[in-house]
Length: 322
Image (cartoon, rainbow, N blue to C red; front, side, top):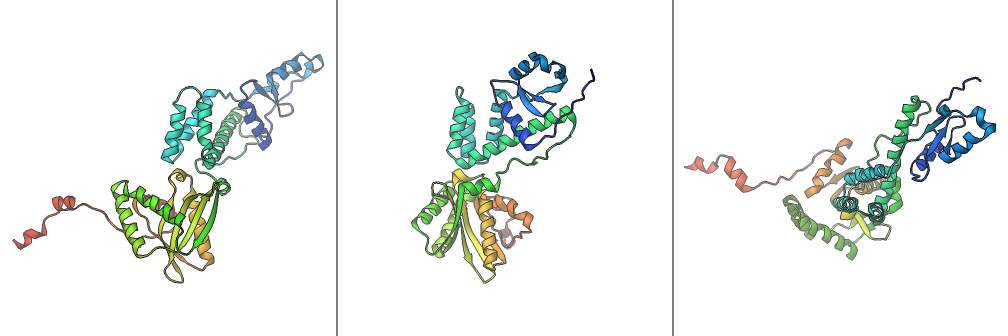
């Protein structure tokens, strides 16, 4: 009988999805049938082996076991995701669920369900990681034949997911009580934070006392509550200033500010503004990294230093008069 040479089938999207689905089945073991590129369970393979009519075409080389995926692998994946969550509140919440002992999978799922956008991010992360497992397995079986190209970075949440969970709108005029309450919550949070945040709260409060912005770009979550805001003030026909922006604490680390600012920048361009001045205060100074790749320049900068440090390390100018 002539020996049949089997090869891995092209790794199409459908086949990739089927393998991932079968990997998560904790009841049955599955194999890839190299003859027709389909998946077959261990039980189905036994029936096929026992079928006398199919005996001539049956060969162990024809079937390849798909990657193993145990509950411990799923736990490790959840742990990886939790450690990558940038929002400290939800990061600690998820890690606490994973360290709680019995029922960790259910607790983890319930915690994710509290914030739909984070839940979607988990599914996106999980899908991409499982794809990588299949890709590695596929390479081991037969090079890169029919290999699909995957995204290199799965850490960031896609804009499509954010657009499904948040709506964006503009507000013109005297701030509503909702906007004022949001600003007050952020200022109090800054006031109770680190020293630079406390100073930022002081400066912003003084700024709002003298000039309260009349223009806002808002982001709302699915429940209709404010999730983020950006206040702006037109300075000239071509220049607009952003004195204040903030994201609700439980919505941070999701990429929401970047999407909000993108919507704002494009709207300003439609209104023929060519330059945006963004004030970074307190912890928001770290967001300079977001703007740097777009040729952003520093126009002003405020330094915070203590008198004791200066006076103890710098020669006293008072000695010059002695």
